[in-house]
Length: 471
Image 1 (cartoon, rainbow, N blue to C red):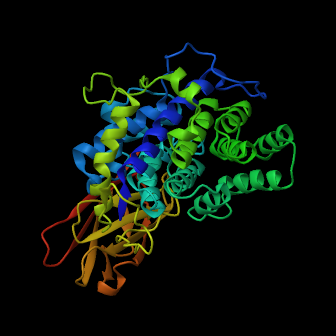
Image 2 (cartoon, helix red, strand yellow):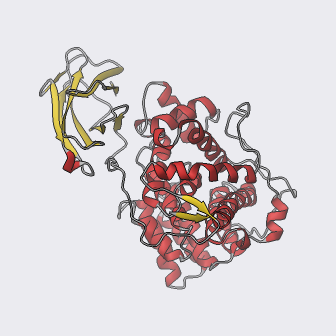
């Protein structure tokens, strides 16, 4: 894969500038439930507003620099949350509290998070993954899941992050909005609320529905979720893209005027259209008005390695792309010539499918396999049953048998003491699963821990996790 450096650099720069513009323009209208009448900035010139949409991505950039793309997963990002994100609002605070209690992602985004698991906190911070994996949405969406599941489990908020990351990754070489939407939808469940809301926005545009009426129909279709939820707000972004018809100002103003989480909808329009059209597609008067500075609000400002401008963020992003793609067997170089993507083979890395729910934990540290355990419930009473489903795939070419041993709370029993499943070389890109039932005893504490250990013969590496079940 060869990328013309000036071409790619310009799109990344436009992504971050567009993000800053949209977050600043939309910020003053955030949380208003009625239609708005925004036309331009209402903030002082050269004073971008702080925005957590951009803050968290700066943190992920630092994590990628310090750890490398191969090491990034949901647990690593969770640790960065705990160390560098002082913000406690909504799902941020819930996920941090859960992790502090010993609950690992994606469980951390699921437990006691019914109100916010479908909300907006994750899809607004996907650009970093799209920029790391331009034209490779299958890789960008994997990292978007690692990111989103920390505070959204496998709710609509996570589906939204996957959808937007896929669109943004594809947008580096595709400007057709309908094709971008199709790409995003192909990565999420067909009947999830997010997909339904996006398809409704497309249908309303195709039927030439008046913009205000289309906006109101999106609100009505999502009223049971309430405000600040992903399905409705992502649909506002789609309305902005479609009704804006390629015009940056018109698209952003449409999205912001839908109301609700206006800094998020405006910022995502700005970054996506920045990727699609580069800096030439962003009105020069808006670029000059906002300036280049990044103002943070949701990350620890004592951490000295933050990029302070969109330009610095652009250059640091560019440096990471070749090593990020190499993790998946894609060898990329910057060039002064033409982009070379035609016929590029997709080298899929062995990886697990997404779990069916956020009641899931991953086995980390196994060099030879990747695995997870899904569990049927996280609250129990005496006499309950819990089903554990173990899923593994192979990361190497030799066959192996995975053994999972279980250490249960006193008085609890299982169908069998260990669970075995075979993974071999032909299953390298597939999965092998096994289930076991756990029978809850008469003694149930507030916090009950099932200790699980995965290992294989003739390999020294083991992986241990603690599954917390609440009484």
